[in-house]
Image 1 (tube, rainbow, N blue to C red):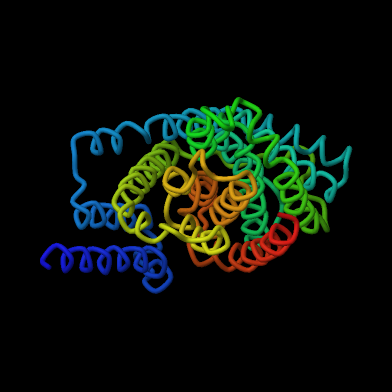
Image 2: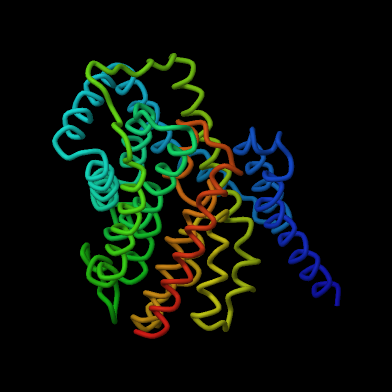
Length: 350
């Protein structure tokens, strides 16, 4: 009886952590301004409620963010030094293609190439270019959202692109799938590439006027700004590792014995919970191919809805100074509409 009561309270408290992670940044400005610290607190609370503290988890929370934050730091200093050359190339590309075609190609190529250059590098390149374009703040937010959706989709096509795809290929390497490097491209390509094209087309709409000018320079960031951003990304990733581990008991209880259609919408939790965590729970070799498609499409789409949803969102929002509610105003309508469209098509064709 006591164990059942404790299990109920654990579920209630973990549900409260999820609700807090979802809504508190929109209700309290301080939580929005210090989102990485707030999510870190949520992660600590989730692990404490679940009773999952261990030396291994602490080591993972310390170790895993190192590569990402180091990439952010290194490329931050490289952009600080050579950013002018990048914008000269962007200017020449825009002159050759025109604003609309340039934005379309910019988003599409980053989305597709993210599966090989990684979502981290694609997001850093995207943020640096967006920062230098002659767009209003609202337009820059829209472009950043579209790029991050495209990168989140494209990165899933190979195990190099992002942790989600790495985990899925590792879990399906044995029979019956014998997943290799191109497994996800063959499984999801027909579904993912149209999504990347869609967000590229949405980005092209923003190209109504000239985006760059001759001799344009980008104001160099201070060393302190570059270091601070890398530190925030480190804390953000550590927070997501703790949050993902702490919420595993709730996720396991929630997804047991549910249909793929229900799981499709439950996977919207990946807007705040690392989608690699949900993938590690849901993806099993016993699943048929159509169910794999259902679950993976929902995970990568939902990851774009809010800033904590995936690494590209975190990097772009940090570099461009985008707040949670500003991101959500653009990402939620287009993301949910996209999820509805995919759900309808997948339900009919699979």
